[in-house]
Length: 248
Image (cartoon, rainbow, N blue to C red; front, side, top):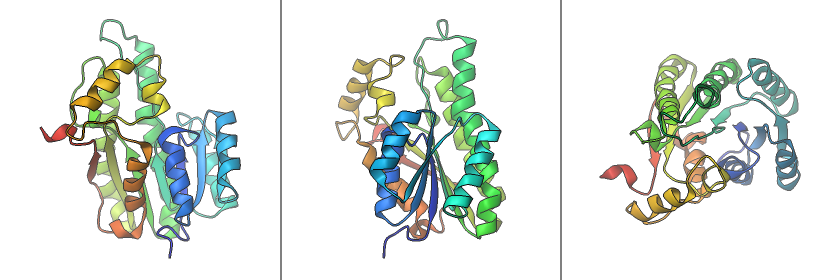
């Protein structure tokens, strides 16, 4: 039997990168998947490639009305969502005296407030279903500081804290909440982002114990475990997938 048979997942930032990798693996494992993103063209292409088990919805994670619409459409199309991956995020790499208030606000709204909205809007549906797994994608930047990433660090530490708070509140209703902390992953956000120094990204890959940057599927496999019943006694926890970066 497929590991996610009968489960219904929502994956934000699902049009490309880690998000679409998660969606592809989840569908292979029997789930119905709603991918959401502001990238409409890429989202529609992903939906067409992934087939009938996938639905794409255009979605701004910073807007409560968009979240409410996603929940309603997911229930109408597939049923009550039982998995949420808060995957959408951005990163702006700038020194503190160059970064603007707008940089900080945009990072906060997508990486932190968007996760908050996802948590609070999906919970009633999971409670109604009697089961749920919320997976919040934080970062190793939610575990340690990084120069030039003040706003990103702040948002990813916040995701870590929100995860623990929600786990305490939602546990009695059989809804689990965990965070994943990836290191450097080979995605468009890290490799094609004009706000991130690509040479620095490659250099980090050479310094971690495994001596490489990760592929998205290596995070997807961890998401699969946390979404499945195999992790039924794990909640409020941090799962690190960083090639050993934080071990030193």
